[in-house]
Image 1 (cartoon, rainbow, N blue to C red):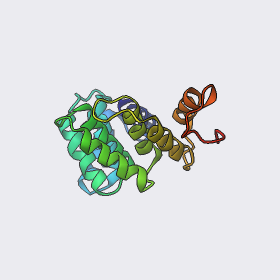
Image 2 (cartoon, one colour; image 1 turned 45 degrees about the vertical axis):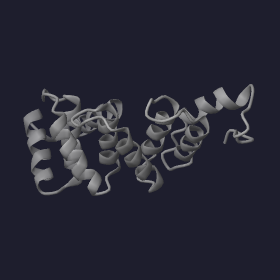
Image 3 (cartoon, rainbow, N blue to C red; image 1 turned 30 degrees about the vertical axis):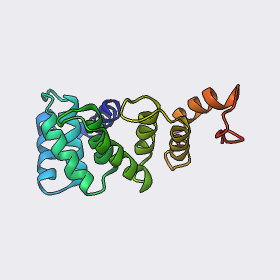
Length: 175
């Protein structure tokens, strides 16, 4: 989750920084927009709080509140990052059940592929659920079939499980 949020806020900062005199103006602009209910501004502000970028102290409590607000308004970024906060226990008590539910909702409603990817990763290596390679492979395949075409996790798991000694649940071909 941190990687995605950091990448996103870095991209946003690079693309918008020329519009603002300094980082304080950028943060104030996001805050003003968020106060007006502009979901993207709230996500950007939450990303800043959760990552500590732009000389802002990490503040998981504010990030959690902002991600909750944006997720309630069907923001893929907000939902995936909120689920990540539950999974990591950042700004909230760690709760894998909530993380799994939010990731599942994001994946099923096609809000974005990262919900499927993160849920698949939970099924691969998390003490909250039994390891389920078949489920993880299905989730990674779903993300690979989406508009984002993020196939890295699928490709790696397929190669591990299905090339040398194929498991019964492996698809006949990779794609």
